[in-house]
Image (cartoon, rainbow over all chains, first blue to last red):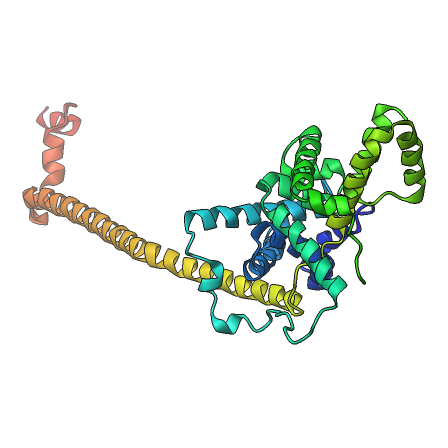
Length: 201
Length: 164
């Protein structure tokens, strides 16, 4: 694969030469997809932001050895997956030692909080409840099935690229997605059968 | 629609809601096999639900934080490498100084040894020279020619002529 086929790889080659503007462009493009993946793996906004930040720091640190052998997004999501799994393992080893507890009050002025004074419309409430059900069902899936389903939402990743990120075969990826979806269908059966899935907006 | 086409459609549906053309394809197949319709509807609703999950909250200054973290990391790396250099010098400087001391000491010792040997040789030579007996004075050579003539083996023709 050449940088002509993957514009992100071309940006990454510029990052390799020390171009911070190219790096900023990559961060701006991928911060939300990375955050979505990490957040749904960790289910904690503060920890997810720290891990997502580390993902990009790691990308910058490893830029010197970046080779255009696969798509940039594959490489990026592999780093995101690995750091998320490391964080999950760290949590399981030290359940009380949360990254949130380690960070000081001053480190958290950017956290976003829900405006509790605003009254959401009933449709919004219903949709919010449904979304919460999906989030809960997703969080209960085994890690590899969850990552597979989350990567599946990234349209720029093909099934082959998902297999690279997950470090398994193409058929294994499809199997993970299938099993994950089957579990979700079982858990969300009452909601899926009513068909109330429209976005109120 | 064969099984492969059905699987392709299903895999597409896992990723995103089907477009109208794909929907039409699916409808044709579902009319032939209506038992599957409920399954497909559930599948489609799940895909829709998953695709409509809202984005995770992200700080507006996220990019700035990343850049700041990189700056901090680079500064820390520079500090670490400076410390490593100092530590290297601290580790090797005493050893180098010790080696230089040993080297200089060895050089001087070798030089002293050489000088001592030269001095000893000179001393020996002087002793040899001084042990030789003193030379006789020039007066001893006063009758040198006569004595030399005495030692000559040839006959003294002049003397013989006089005697005859």
